[in-house]
Image 1: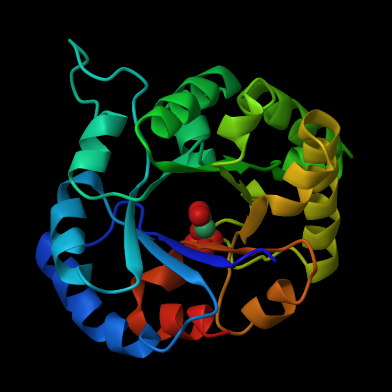
Image 2: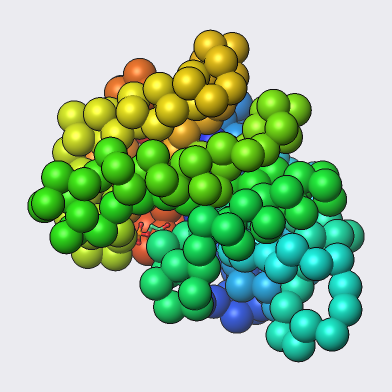
Length: 249
Ligand code: PGA
């Protein structure tokens, strides 16, 4: 039985003070939610505020990115042991915005994923096709390539620690959600990739989240799909009411 994971990706939003206010309102709204794990991923500088505000609650805190070196002359970067030390449980890796604007590749995704696992963080590794790729029928090729390049070379014991997030790029922040059927097909395809690379047990165990315009109004139908094990939520995770409705789908 896979425990659902509902994760909020706050992107470049909220100050430390706003983070504290969010948590004060959000925690009571999800206090009774025992059916899933809950995570918020604020910008790096607000992680300490989030950790302090969620202490003793079931809400975990994660980073939105990580560098693969532990330390060194890498101006501007943050390492996996640093995220762990500040109280992170997880880290998002390979988000499409990082791929699109910051030169993330399947190779860097792989390096970041192994570094996160080594530091004891749970990587949430994002894959997904662009609109152009979907319209030219390349969705499965793209997912297979991203899976192979970003995750395929992990050791089985490493793979057991990761979460995959399927996020069709055309559905992110656009209000255009993949239909439950579309998402289900992509999730099944990804689970088949896992089965091929790591075997049946790994395929049954790995959680695959859906991301891309998840809202209170569509979460239930998405979560009803057998291969969808949670959500990676951007915009709607910034509002305590909306994110709590998503968590309590
Ligand atoms: P969205 O973002 O929910 O605002 O579409 C999802 C994401 O980018 O993780």
